[in-house]
Amino acid sequence: MERQKMQNAKYGVSEKSSYRSMLARDFRKNRLIYLMALPVLAYYIIFQYGPMYGLTIAFKNFTPAKGILGSPWVGFQWFQEFFNSYYFERLLKNTLLINLFSLLFSFPAPIILALLLNELRKEKFKRTVQTITYMPHFISLVVICGMIHDFTARDGIINDLVVLLGGKRSTMLLEPQLFKSIYIISGIWQGIGWGSIIYLAALSGIDPELYQASVIDGANRWNQIWHITLPGILPTIVILLIMRIGSMMSVGHEKIILLYNPSTYETADVISSFVYRKGLLEANYSYSAAVGLFNSIINLILVIAANWFSRKATETSLW
Image 1 (cartoon, helix red, strand yellow):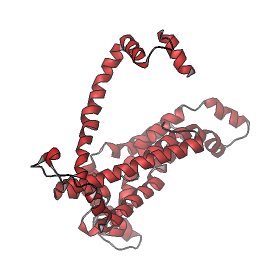
Image 2 (tube, rainbow, N blue to C red; image 1 turned 90 degrees about the vertical axis):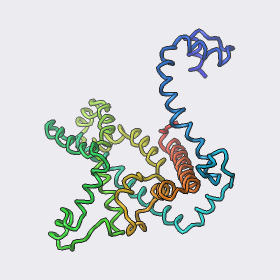
Image 3 (tube, rainbow, N blue to C red; image 1 turned 180 degrees about the vertical axis):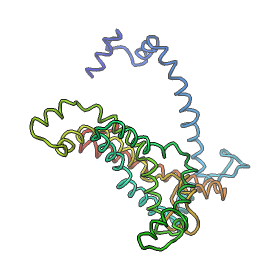
Image 4 (tube, rainbow, N blue to C red; image 1 turned 60 degrees about the vertical axis):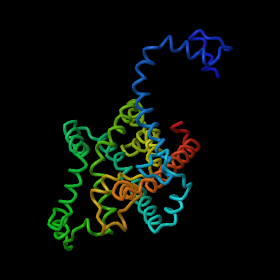
């Protein structure tokens, strides 16, 4: 309320002025800023909110010949069919397990790398490590998946290492029990360097005098990390964790589709890849839209719950 009063005083608007008149005054005062925001607003309306109308086909028996308006309503038929199908349990289990393991291993990896890089004193070596770890992010996902296929092939470099350690050769991407490990480890390799950038930026904002004061108090490097560095980047970690939890039900279907095959469907098939097969390959658009809508609703619930819990526990939240 006090902030609103200050803004009203700043723009010369009395407290009795309506919100609409205040907006009109603000528009006249900052019309160039509003003009600059128009393309962004148009982008979201046309490409983000406009296509949401298509979600109605999840409640219809959609056929392209009749169109969205002409297709008959079927209520929750497609949702019920999905919940009662053989695939529901398998898809839910695979999606949650891949995301849970990614959260446990992929999420902390950039934080650890950023902390290690922050401790390096030789700038040349630090920049070299950063460049090497950033590089996989700039490689096309198709190329990355091709490299994974080559590395895990029967005569690939990983099998050479396995044999060197006394193991047996195998075509790893045909082994269902190895798919999740390959997916998560390759994800860490691809994103650890890029993901560490935001944490390095957060580390640069910590006051150096805190470290100098801690040295006078007798703190060693580990004490500094635990009591200064980690608390300094904790808000950034929490915000990114909330956003990560908000996509717990989403897995990058492009990578899954490029890596999996019918022999690994048991452990590799996830909701997003199922939506792709049903929607684009089998042309079952309504069923596919219902599954995708279910996935989005669960993600929305998760991000709201994570934000609420974070606000209660750490007083840091997205809103």
